[in-house]
Amino acid sequence: MTLWFLFALMTAAAVFAVLWPLARGGRAKAGGSETWVYRDQLVEIDRDLATGMIGASEAEAARLEISRRLLAAAESPRDPPLASNTRLRRVASVVALAGLPILSIAFYLPLGSPKLGDFPLAERARAAGPSQPLDELVAKVEQHLEQNPTDGRGWIVIAPVLARLGRFDDAVRAYHNSITYGGDSAERRSDLGEVIAAAAGGVVTAEAKAEFDRALALNAQDAKARYFIGLAAQQDGRTSEAASVWRAMLEAGPQDAPWRPLVQAALARIDGSTAPALPDEAMAAAKGMDAGDRDTMIRGMVDRLASRLKQNGDDVEGWLRLVRAYMVMGDHGKLQGALADARQAVAGNAERLRQLNEGLKNLGVDG
Image 1: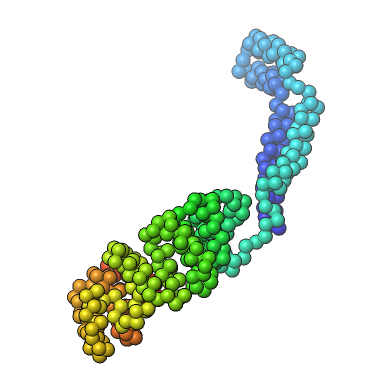
Image 2 (image 1 turned 180 degrees about the vertical axis):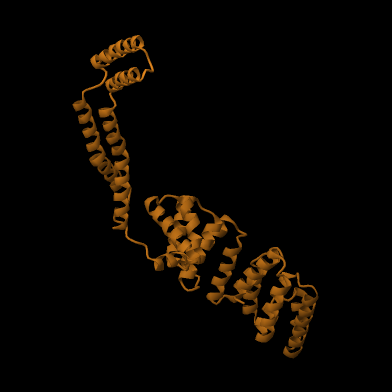
């Protein structure tokens, strides 16, 4: 109601602005004729003659000249009839009174939103929540893809977002479409296999394994596909095959690979060793020891690693090995201390902190 009241005031102001000069123009035209000026001048001449300001001859000459001009002005047709001017003003007034509101409404109804309801403050507060922009973005992309289902780029963009949101079934469909309309690749095949396994509660199903096999056919060194192939073997009870796959990854892969801590932890679980990620020579020496001596040696190496990291905390891989060792040893107190020391040691280097957090995430440590 307030909005319409404001519109009415604005329209009335516009109409008044049009009518005001029309009304003034009519009055000026009615009383401003040139003939009245000359009549006033004749009266003025008689007054000057009576006071002696001009002589009789000058007064007569002036009367003749003004009378001539008065007759010419009276006979001139340049002023339109008063009735015609009145009709024009009335037409203009009607247009201003009725035309402006009608034109305004005609433009507003198709272009404006007269039925749009109020947006309560509570709704505005909820709309500004931290997760709302991502939800709105996903909804817009999904709406776009419903109208353009062959947009491969759109499927490529939204697939990993759906996976991070835990919408695994939708992510599976998005990855399938990204391959169909965006092109096949080892990365997309391995990502598809990962979300299929995630949708199955972490079990590498036959469907997921088929996708990992396709990824390896496209790129035999695809790390994600190789890891999950090993995981599938472990879940099927073929632990020696899983260990063989993961050891091959560690031997051939770079030392700073982000997936290395995850593979090392997986290998440690199936080896049954309390010394995950120890150097190969230390593992070989430990095989010839009894359980007590092996445990003593391992704890000594872990303690030396912890001491070295306190002196030089830039070794992200070292911190991850230490955390992993405490996890396998079941020493929760030292694990928490190592986590705090590691984050403090690399806090000044954004890249090392990112690598540390990524490695801890792969180990299943959330802080």
